[in-house]
Image (cartoon, helix red, strand yellow):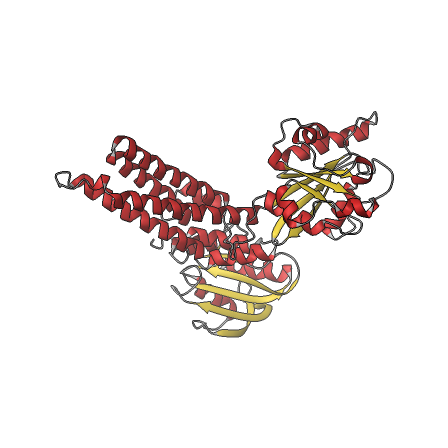
Amino acid sequence: MSNALDWDTIAAVATAPGVGGIGIVRLSGVNSRLIAERICGHPLRDRQVVTTAFYNKQTEQAELIDQGVALYFAAPRSFTGEDVVELQAHGGPIVLDLLLRQCLALGARHARAGEFSERAYLNDKIDLVQAEAIADLINSRTEQEAKGALRSLQGRFSEQIDTLAEQLTRLRIYVEAALDFPEEEIDFLKDRELQTGLEELRTAYQTALHQAEQGTLLREGITIAIAGKPNAGKSSLLNALSGNEVAIVTPIAGTTRDLLKESINIDGLHAQLIDTAGLRESDDVIEQEGVRRAKAAVAKADLILLVRDAASEGTAPVAPASWSDALGLPDTPQAKLLCVDNKCDLLDKDVVSALPVDRAARDRLNDYCAVSAKTGFGLPALRETIKRMVGMDVQLPSPLLARRRHLNALGESLSLIERGQQQLLEHGAGELLAEDLRQAQNVLGEITGRISSDELLGEIFSSFCIGK
């Protein structure tokens, strides 16, 4: 891509709002160096850190704004591919605002959200996946998220997509050549080599899809609703899983009236726990509203922990139909339900010893756990079961952070390839296979931005922070 924006210079505060030891005003564009040199009062050299004063030159006598550091990166060896300057001052909002206003007064324009990263993409410094990884790295909530975003920023996910594109290109060349030379004695469209190539491509796609699914799960996290009858220990379980005394716990049934939310980290997987009001019939208007909100939260959750009081209700896996009845949601998918028997510390030792908490038993009963929120008994098994039920692959050593659009594009591209392969097998329709392969490559190209629309770029970069 060529630089179509080198006539325009942008500026923005690149550090987070608030007070800090250091704050940065960043400029990018053809006039960045000239503007910065006027503010500093002396020349800047490429990649040399300079201690300097910052001045307001709009007054009759230059007024001192602050003292700090200036760093100049000459094009094209910069983040955006344009001339870039960073003015590092003391991190007070007033100081940074004065410095930014001076940049704007000298000819810069205030940058749009994500415009620095957008220019880096337009100037071929990064691809679209890497640009998105910058925002994902900044917004990471767990260590695993940050590591996955960094791998994507380093180009690991892009390399995987490029490899798929290369395989797809080779198959397209093979098919197009066979169509262009139909008079050859060998029917290349029926050749085993083509079918092998298609199968190998499908396998590569499925591997990429699995990694993208894991990356999307890491990025988006999950929502877990804790539901059940009053006094089953739902709030105690919320406190135990979060490690904090978030919810008020009393022996009085119906203590929780409204939704209580808390974020937790399950081995790198971000989860929002929602403690809900006890599910029961009540004449209390406030409690009725609490139950209504509880059912609404349960319906939207990725996973539902149906908590029971093991001391009074017994300990055994519950039939899915009974779960749905207990929740008042008869159409709840079984895959969303995890039965959790709580208060196992109140049971006899012989009963506890027979509970399915070892790994083999959990594998047989994937949707059942027995725990004690009070003592911590069974909580490690509960965490493992949660990860398994939401599809987290703990065997994947180095996950790559991915977005929903990446997952959708990979799925759509694979579907086109499979449709073309089916057309070839059933009807010998090489032309239809060639067209499906072409469309599949176009869809694949949208992931890294090799093929992209202005609408897609606008949607992606508008979610960035100003100054990045």
